[in-house]
Image (cartoon, rainbow, N blue to C red; front, side, top):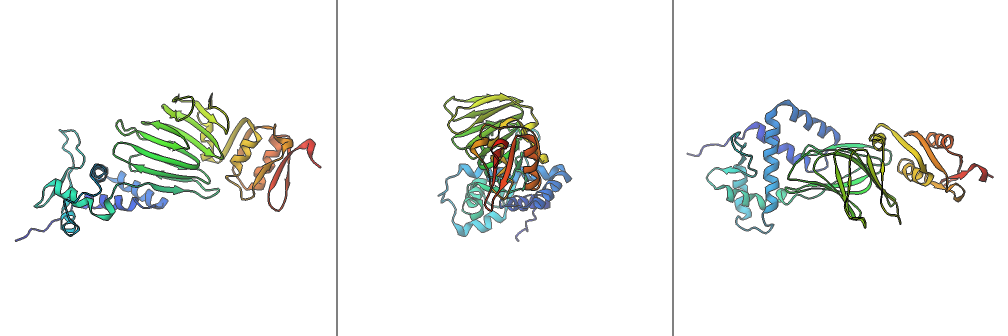
Length: 330
């Protein structure tokens, strides 16, 4: 007589959530997932066990042939992740299959299409949009306007590629899994901290609000940044490390852009990520700097405020808005 297998409902829910979050979940999905995690400490434990099984698969060869596709269905139906005992250090990837050894169960998982090596997950925002992302490792990301990035949570390292735009990172501290952000030829490496990166139109800015980060890949070698420090690099120039008010670089998250004697071209590069009509700096205003707080608003209102902060005037054409020095206005 065959005894039926009853899957623990919490473990089943954890597996369902893990599968759902591998796609591109909506904000409502993340909100619901967070509510489920916080409803019971057992939920987080079960989810960690499911993620551990996934992460252990990274160490197995992609062409492992110890189990055939025909064997995969019955084996995977009986695979249950075990919760680590409190008296022993957590051991990831511990499986039990009814009537099969753990190694055979893992081999069966390898040939299941949806359980291949973790791939990058792409996230993006449209112009004028922001988006919050809660990663399975406990880190939280906020994407600014017109931003594209890719995420992969591996067993030994957590990788993010900031393709374009701006994002803030509140990284969960995991001693043996560094969090690495690739931006062009540079890498920003941390274990757990809060920082902001702007990577757009050839300009890179890395700002730290909490903890330490190491920025590598430039001619200067690795550069360590602490709280209140910012690395800035523009095309054709060396990296410059400066002091910055810790919250200034994060002001965009509350709908503000803060500038202190910033070149007008830098301000315009930021604004062009928010507005539909391109803005261009006329040569007559190339030396103009801007100080002030710009509210992220309707584009005509943003340009009017910019005219108040700097000695410029805006001339609109059918294709663009041109910012000229006041003395150059016709």
